[in-house]
Length: 176
Image 1 (cartoon, helix red, strand yellow):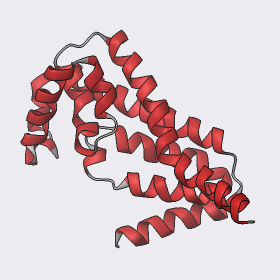
Image 2 (cartoon, one colour; image 1 turned 90 degrees about the horizontal axis):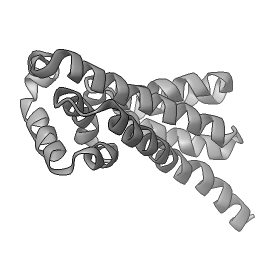
Image 3 (spheres, helix red, strand yellow; image 1 turned 180 degrees about the horizontal axis):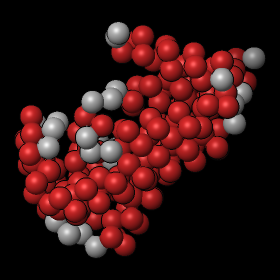
Image 4 (cartoon, helix red, strand yellow; image 1 turned 60 degrees about the horizontal axis):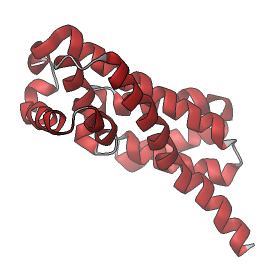
């Protein structure tokens, strides 16, 4: 099954069953933000496609945005908790055990940027997968982590869904 097939399948499910849009978007954003799943799931492209689907189908944007923001928030929170709980033993956990350089890069990024790194890391693919984990490993205070986590999750969710959702509406109004 190709990435295009997955995108089409998820889009079809959401189109046919709009009531499932919120839990599907929550799960995709959660998986995209969770340290281990985000390395395996190509959800960024799927979420961008769903943003366009939202725009063309008239599904309400703000509940979908909230689902994506909450999913991303909880994915990073769980990653932080795993890092805090398991510390450096995460290096031996799959899939990080197969890609230890990701954790090394994430650690260097976190050491350089600290709490701002938690915020910025959300917006860059492989960093999104490991920076919250590193924050937990390094014992970052949870209050600082959660502040960066919630604000970045809200902005990221808007940025990933709005171009398709609001862009389609704007284009149809401009062209129509």
